[in-house]
Length: 205
Image (cartoon, rainbow, N blue to C red; front, side, top):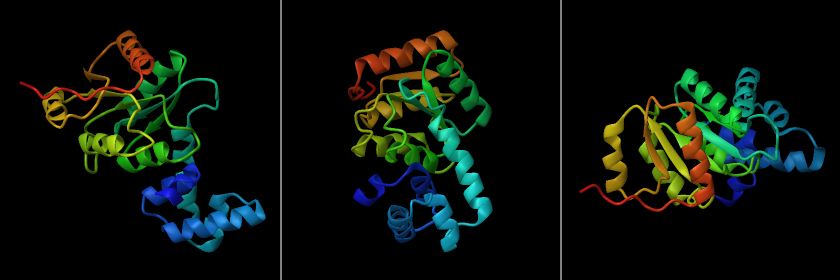
C-alpha cells in the first residue's frame, strides 16, 4: 500500500477503477518528478488512458475534492444516487464543511487513500452501494490505516442493516435512516467530528 499512499487523487482514482496498473502509475509518477507534467497528461501520452477516460476521471476528481477552502473540515459523502448525494453535500456545505461526493466504492477508496485532499474529518456513508455494498466498504475503512479512526455516519434507506453492523462490531458514530432533516444531519456530523474516533457498536441482543 505504500506505493498507493504516495499517489495523487487522480492516480488513485484511475487505479481503483482498474483503468491503469500500479506499474503504469509508478512510471507516470517517475516521469512527473523529472518533467513536472501532470500525471493525467503523462498517462495519456503513455497510452494508459484514453482522452475520454481521462476527462471523466478529472470530473470525478473535482467532485471528490469538493471546493478548495482548505481551512474547512472535509467530509466525504458516499452515495450511489447522484441526486441524494448532491442534496446531502449541499446541506453539509451550508453547515460550513468542504464536501466531496463518491458514487461508488472505487471513488470512495480513491478519495480516502490519496493525500489530496487529506483524510476526511468524517464520512457520511450510504449502505446501498452498487458493487460490494456499504457494509463491506465500512469493513475496509476500519481495516485501513488512513480511515480506521475516521468517524462514519451511516445514512441509509435500509434501517434493517443496523443489526448487521452491530453484529460485525463495526465502529460507527451514528446510524440514521432516511429521510432525515438537514438540522439533524448537521448536528450528528458535528457531534461525530467533535467526538472523534468512534467505538465499536455492541452486537444486537
